[in-house]
Length: 589
Image 1: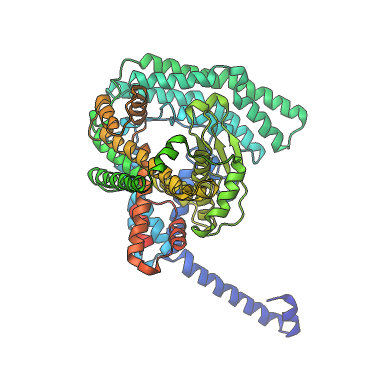
Image 2: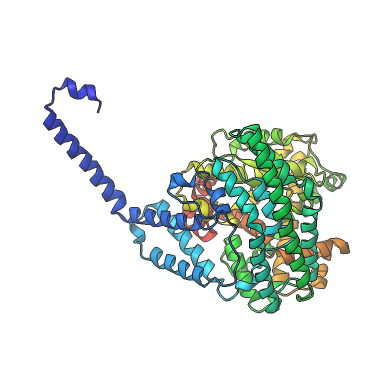
């Protein structure tokens, strides 16, 4: 109601005031009834409490979650990377407390969105507590996915939103040494318990660290800091020069020595491990592998059932290939000769993908993104591409990194950009954010959903790529290319189970791979070593993909002729990254 309308009716001031107070009280009472005093209100308050407590536990995590934590009422923790410890008793007690509180909510009185969040949180914390007893089987270090490989990228991308961020960043650099010290202490405990990594893995980590510190004066973090400082634009030239000087000093006197100390510690522990082998060879290894599959893939079926599902998909894909080649023998010749697309810049490919997905996926508002390239010093140790999620309170920047270490075919680049961009990680992240979920949904997620979704959409990307092949059999060629990739991922996923759950050694792994024509000793050794070092990683992608495939078929069977692909994708995207039992419950209804 406007002030002019009040004047027009010449209402006495006292009556107006009374009505205003009554109206305000009514609105407030309604709000309190629906929110503060309701089960939904209590649950949302609890979710905020968990978010604030978990987000504030680590400055790096907080910064990547929130650009301006103070606006959410969260006090910044000390700018430190924290420590690693084998004693997680306090964490387990906290999670048990969370579980008790979650179980106390009246499920039937919650909104559907809050029910989904409750189910997700209950399953998440229950899964985390199942780690108890096997904490020493955790591994912070690995040649490609370990914290020592990821940390320089995370710090190099540490965005500056305000002056405090620059101070926090510099202090985080200084905290690398005590953080690595805690990791070395943890690794010593692993060694004392007979759980330390093999010398082969240690050597690969040492090689990765050596690559990072090989030319300290030219460390890429120095140049990137100067660029970000200039982009920040709030300091004079003299102030920038002083900050750059201080930053370089910290890199040379703190960061590089921290990596050298980590390398010396690992070198000293060499020989205390055993030969490269899977988790099943260690006490509690099978139980830990089951925990990994649940926590990483979001799948809760028995390992044997998962293996059976993989074998069924492998047989189906291979039979499809046989039929295709029987009907069109020329496909094999063309595929062997090489199927590729015309040159696309990454930006052009992402633009094309945004247009192509319109028929299969729900519309997304225009989204800005950037394409950047992995620094050459890290190319050998990072993924072909990756997407960095933006803070939840800004939604930007959306950055896709491309690794140029090897000249990938244009078809591979196109589908990789679909995986990382549209309709993969970037699209899924932005779409879910547009649904305005509670903050806890950004912090606690499911990797199997996230990576499984991005793998699932690759099959669509291969379909879209057919439009750019100058061949009458273009659709079949790209379909065959996808089937080939699907089979490879399936083989490596089966190998993951064989190595970590069934105890296959390198010879058994080589025999398995040879059945599929993979016989090069260097290749089989590298595949074996990588899977030993990253248990469950392939299943996070391919197991997640199969869950989406199965869920789609279940919805199609339930809805029959009413099934709509775009609507199915919409429901999946709105549910967001949750474990697959929870996703199935809310998508199937």
